[in-house]
Amino acid sequence: MSTEELKDFDDAELIMAVLSGNLHAFDELVLRYQKAMLMVAQQIVRDPIEAEDIVQDAFILAFESLTQLENLNRFGSWLYSITRHRALRYMKKANRFQYHEDIDDELKVEANPESSDPAKLIIQQSIHEGVRKCIMSLPEEFQEVVKLYYWVDMPQKRIAEFLSLPLTTVKWRLHKAKEQLKEILEKQGYGEIG
Image 1 (cartoon, one colour):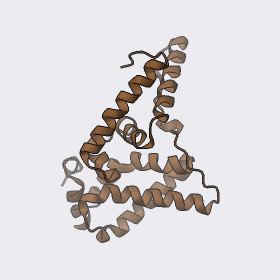
Image 2 (spheres, one colour; image 1 turned 45 degrees about the vertical axis):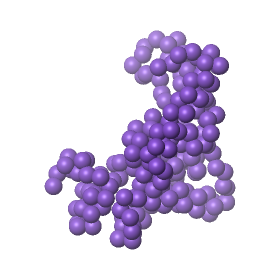
Image 3 (cartoon, one colour; image 1 turned 30 degrees about the horizontal axis):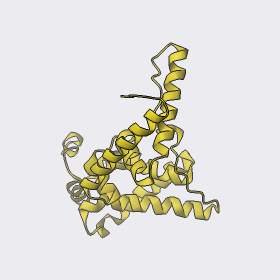
């Protein structure tokens, strides 16, 4: 079975393939969830290198414990739980627990690097920073789905699985977040930003 064919499999099918000895299927699961897991870990530990280590540990633990997963369709939320607990454990161990809600530099929307006009770059960076601050002012449950959907490029269905939410809840949160962002941006003078 080729790696390309595995992309069409849902999580449960990939897990069955892994349990049957196909390690490429686990690689596909890593590709699907790595960015989202990094976002979760970085929100807690604030150190990109430590976050990467935590995500790697979470994947190793998940791989080793895959046979214990009772509901294969809950893999994403199980992985979210493992990552979050690993990050919280790291912070507790490091005796410096501080939960931060803002996005790390890697997850910020960046200005177009192809633009050669420094004034345009500054304006773009200012707009992106303004949008980022507006997103950070949203309620936490809205921030999470917005970050996963727009910055991690996670499909709505996978977000629902990852956060253990009904798909309708994810869609509703994205819709409400867009409405609130539009209001906030208009109040701050950004007008219509596409």
